Length: 256
Image (cartoon, rainbow, N blue to C red; front, side, top):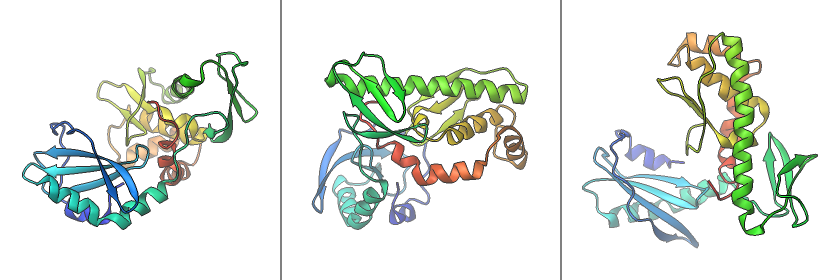
């Protein structure tokens, strides 16, 4: 999430694939809260840009090559009120641990871990049951969620490609920080695994969107007309759901 002031300072900022790798993360205390601080220098950046990453409890600062680190930190401290509001709006992190409740296909599910359960994950009647080692619960449950995402998205993809009369392309499950889906020039479709937690119609709207890109690699009127012909639901309602609740999906779990 970028602050209004940061956006004003960064109007001429142009992301470029040649951005320098992140410098060593630091920590910073603003007000009464401690944050991870990730500094990136970008050769084409014109001004300092500040973003928040509530899922990681981090502040991300992008600096022009000539900017001083102290200047950037002072800039971040000046945004204390906005930073606090940004994290409050995003909501609280939900750990994958016994007793926690997480969404699965838009329905709240309680995590029922018990050593007596088998290692296989079973989701039914609002409960996700699993056994195995407690220490690896987060990793194993995340792996299962990703597998469920791929299973569901593969079925969605086959459905929409059949409607479109086009061959089913390769499918990859992504961990993108800011994209729900993408369609590459070679036709590979990538869908964010976190959509397994969204309602089915929201996930399907993203898959339909990317299938529509197989015919129109743009967002023209023709593209949206084709998308509306493919998708059976209300895509604008699905878009509103993602805008209102999508960031919250990044706050679930810790493993990637």
